[in-house]
Image 1 (cartoon, helix red, strand yellow):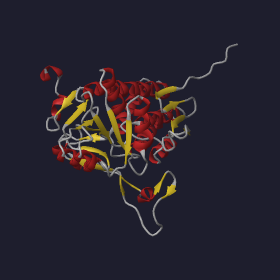
Image 2 (tube, one colour):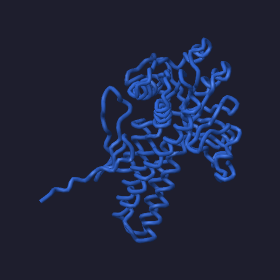
Image 3 (cartoon, one colour):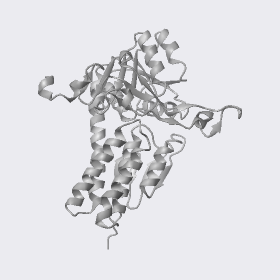
Image 4 (cartoon, one colour):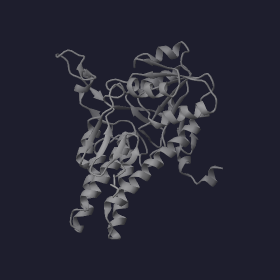
Length: 346
């Protein structure tokens, strides 16, 4: 008799939904080690997101996996308790990283899927798992389209500076650049205190065959002043409707330098957040200041000092050249156009 071996649902390469758990690739130790964190409940997933096990768009995929676990657990409850348990799970997962709106959007979608299953008196687990996988596939497809639009703005011979870890936004952009036969160079900031640029971005771009160099977070302005950088490209955790770019702290100071030295700044985001009219509508996360006193698990500062860690900053529209989305390229002053029907944009 053949033995059935459950095949994990791959929401992304870094998040696997298995029969009794969600496994998340631990990016705190990548690329030196390839370890997975196993989560058996949505609370475990929430804790993993808070502890920076996964970063950039990783929390979106992890949250989708967490909602799958919540749906499976809800199927064991009385019908009257199921929706409340899903709403509780959604609220907990959204609270993990409040600045980025991707978790908010995916868990809201999965709560709606659960509502539909409840109304049809169907199990929640399979429905939410299918929708979670579809959400992951849709995210990656939109990233590919975004990358194609962004690649048109990067010429042959460019030297592109990145900051932090933009995941599929930057890899799809540079993949599209390479498909067009262009030859470019990349410079990555190390991105303290978690070194996402050094460990994740630089590794990924070098693996793609892009000549890649690493700099400390304090070097971009000087490199721009001597003409060593032609384009500044980052993801955006959120872009508000007034063109403000919310991203990893340090983006603002580089964007100001880019503006001063006439280096175009391209902000990559699948869509501007129509629920955020301006940056005042975005809760900027401050993380434990103790984190900046350490690097790769080792304390780097005196015991006499304390740390401060604002995790995100806001770059005003005047320092942003172009906002690149899955629907094309937009001025930061005309993001309403993103939501106009295609016929009106033609």
